[in-house]
Amino acid sequence: MSETRRMAPADLRSRAWFDNPHNPGMTALYLERYLNFGLTPEELRSGRPLIGIAQTGSDLSPCNRHHLELAKRVRDGIHAAGGVAFEFPCHPIQETGKRPTASLDRNLAYLSLVEVLYGYPLDGVVLLTGCDKTMPACLMAAATVNIPAISLNVGPMLNGYFRKDLTGSGTVVWKARERHAAGDIDFQQFMDIVGSSAPSTGHCNTMGTASTMNALAEALGLALPGTAAIPAPYRERGQAAYATGLRIVDMVWDDLKPSDILTREAFENAIVANAAIGGSTNAPIHINAIARHIGVPLTNDDWEQVGFDIPLLVDMQPAGRWLGEEYFRAGGLPAVFAELIEAGKVHADALACNGRTIGENYRGKHSWDRTVIRAYDAPLMPRAGFLNLKGTLFDSAIMKTCVISEEFAARYLRNPADPMAFEGRVVVFEGPEDYHRRIDDPDLDIDAHTILVMRGAGPIGYPGAAEVVNMQPPGALIRRGVTALPCIGDGRQSGTSGTPAILNASPEAAAGGGLALLQTGDRIRIDLNRRSADILLPPDEIARRRADLAARGGHPYPATQTPWQEIYRAAVSQLDQGMVLEGAAKFQRVAQISGVPRDNH
Ligand code: FES
Ligand code: MG
Image (cartoon, rainbow, N blue to C red; front, side, top):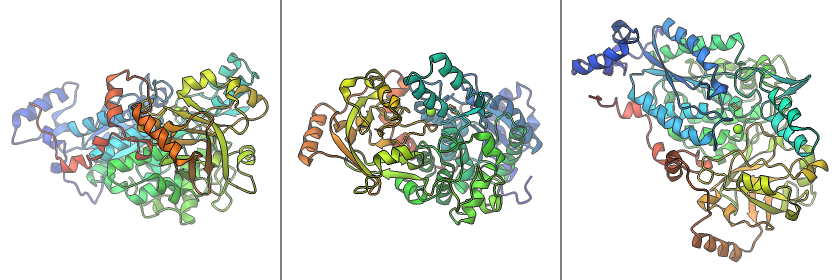
């Protein structure tokens, strides 16, 4: 245990349950049921930190299922450090299993975890993260309650191979889908290729949203240094679980809370790290949400200002070539931070959960494999951050420029008279079903210069904001070699997708955003230099359409199907605001401000 202990055993919040001299009857009631599975009064009453293990793994959550094993090593660490472990289940959030979208459940898991962390006798918590939305749900809840918290990633799957080629999670699906649409492969071959990308336990092995969010948990300082990228089956993963269990007990004694770690500087470090790793376009949504729950102002303008000029250092799919095993062996996030620290691009004095600074943790830990993690001055791409576009189409939308292919850039962005800008006729789809039904319809006249628009895919419209904006061109165009058209939408895109889409448009059509005004055949103009995205219509026509939209009662969206969808639709903010429950964002540092809850009997 720490020599510089700031917290006395009598100050542990769990004492309010198990050692309350003012209400011995309730102390007895709390004790008797927690003793019934074999815990002893000594463990609960002698001033040991009681540590929650927020278990996000289950049979319904295969990405995180390995946490059922890792939690045993977390427990070992907690016990070895003098704490007592309480493992409890979290609401499952499986990206590939939950319909209509796992992101609908992020805020539900968040809400329930807030109640657990606040309402039970826990002095600290280990957050078991992995699949895309599990890290944000857990960190958002830890931010709101603000008890000592540390996160542990489940780790990526081993590399996938089909024959001798690497097959990366998600990325291979999008590629194989093109070949299937073009008639190159049949469904069985499609399935064989896709299946090969998931060879072991763990989360997506590409730099999709899971690898991104867990890298950012470490970049924020909430995961032990060097732990984010360890593949799930590796021995180092179990060792990291043990070290995480050891560390959380000391964090309780040190009273090291999320609010001590999640500072403005930490969030800026995360934005910089996200660019350098080629991270997911889902990151701004989730990181902005965590920032809102800890009370740090953060906007998509910050993402562009802090992150856009940061070079791409990690050669990993979808922006690059390799997968999780090469990235880990090349040094993982510590090697990325070593470059960023040396280049003066991160706040080296930001505090991490191990009690040291980012500089102390990572300085000098350069990669020994420059084919996977590049030096800062020899990057894969000079600017890898996001652009934040604005205009009559929306107030904010994100574009990940590091996945723009040469072919795409040559087709759209190399007009010498107007570089980095393009205009085009739009074809508008009302959600993914409409897209799949009509994309190959020759009457739509989709050619190599059409812009595809997807609306009805935002937080309210879908609900939950689905990953459906990365639309592929019609099969006839793909067969002619046009593999990507510009896509714009008020939904999201998979972090494993390499499509240069304009995403997360806020406000969405269902909330009265400009996309609701578009009609197939309209022309729009995107200017990446000016960060603008506009409808090419006279102002009086835009005003007429807006009045017409209001008269129709807004843009329609499908009926609500479940009670949670109803509650969610009424309370959710837009993607640029983190898609948080507005009423929840005003509750901050709950454990400090609200004390402990009242007795239950
Ligand atoms: Fe769970 Fe990608 S689907 S991590
Ligand atoms: Mg996804």
